[in-house]
Image 1 (cartoon, rainbow, N blue to C red):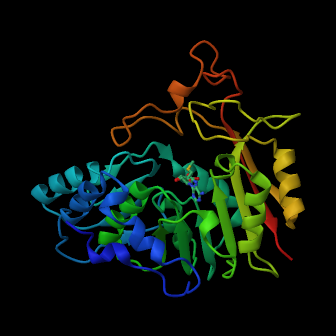
Image 2 (image 1 turned 30 degrees about the vertical axis):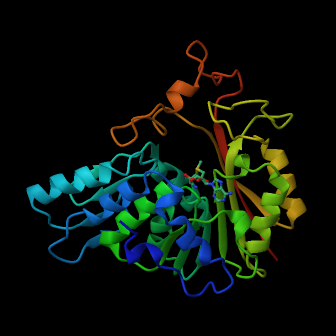
Length: 316
Ligand SMILES: C[S@@+](CC[C@H](N)C(=O)[O-])C[C@H]1O[C@@H](n2cnc3c(N)ncnc32)[C@H](O)[C@@H]1O
């Protein structure tokens, strides 16, 4: 089976972006589960009428008026796209209780950032596009999300089957693959910095992608209390690919060095077991299993437990 044509959509206003990577990545050869995911999306029940979508509630939602059989099928097909990490979503009568209460992060962000009216936004490492929906709900005109994890792109395709909204994109691209030629009013990098080997290079990239004369870059990352940033030798909270967990000071220095001014620390908070946890929609191990059972202030490796900060900077 080949990919349905819907998976190959592309925002036409990004002519210099590597469009060819899209069709290369949305191919069965790239991931053993790809045919199964395509089947799950193709098998989603058809809604009897157009979805009524709500983007301003904690759970991004749509009403479809499905009957009981179709609701059962909806649940089954969406479950084939497990694990669901970012959300929640309410798709008709199905509540996707994701690993993360991403609505909590959104609340922290939006109380400082306020309206997104008319803005074009880039969301680097966007996951399944949950935040893109919330940004549209706050007035953004378009959100381009990029994320190399194919499953998250497929989850977005499943949601889009009902939402049918060409203003929110989740493209299977890495940040280092996109050119700086199209600047955005707001550029978000949330949960990506510590996965990058060269954090300064990443912050520079966020700056380069931010529009001059008033654009904003927003960086959210794991942080540690000072005095020094942490460069884990091996794993951090069971994650293999964490290269650096900075102090807030180091993060701010990198942003200043990149060229951002007027920095504002939006939030610093310790991640709780209520915000990140296993659920029926993400039944693998979660934060609880990454903490030392005898001392929950530490990770299983003995590092400080996850704490996250978000900082906004301005580009003159
Ligand atoms: C911890 S998750 C954060 C998701 C979401 N931004 C949030 O804050 O909840 C990190 C995401 O970054 C993506 N990612 C990893 N390396 C990336 C890269 N080089 N470019 C863009 N995204 C990347 C991962 O696939 C993953 O979905």
